[in-house]
Length: 151
Image (cartoon, rainbow, N blue to C red; front, side, top):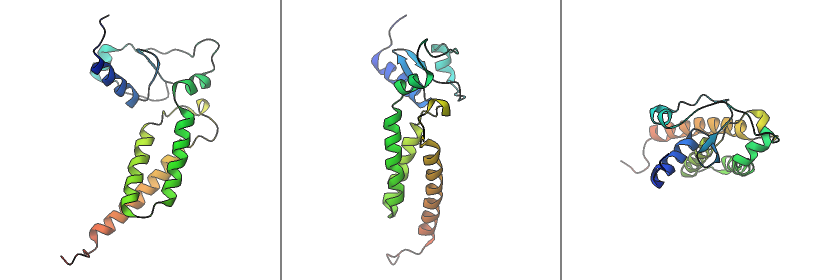
């Protein structure tokens, strides 16, 4: 097979990461079958999709920990949760909500059996949803309030 140019390989890596796949080795992307991820026409043409199992002798949870930086994601999620509690000003709330959303988009969304105990993903998602609803209420109130500038 002909090797792809570097920019095409980088674009493929970004696409696969958005689909929450992990690269087992160069050109081999994997994930548990717990999400229905549409590949799109280009990927269906360029990729072979099949169902398999973890390599012999390797526990599925150990493979998941090797493929995804679960401890790093966990630590950042807990730090973002603390930021949600501390941030009070409108600009700061907007910034925190954007950072939390980006972090949630990087969650591999693995089955519970493959995650470490006390995985903060679902909790952070609930906290973000509540925080985003509150932020929308604050923004609606801010927009509806008369301007302090005298205009």
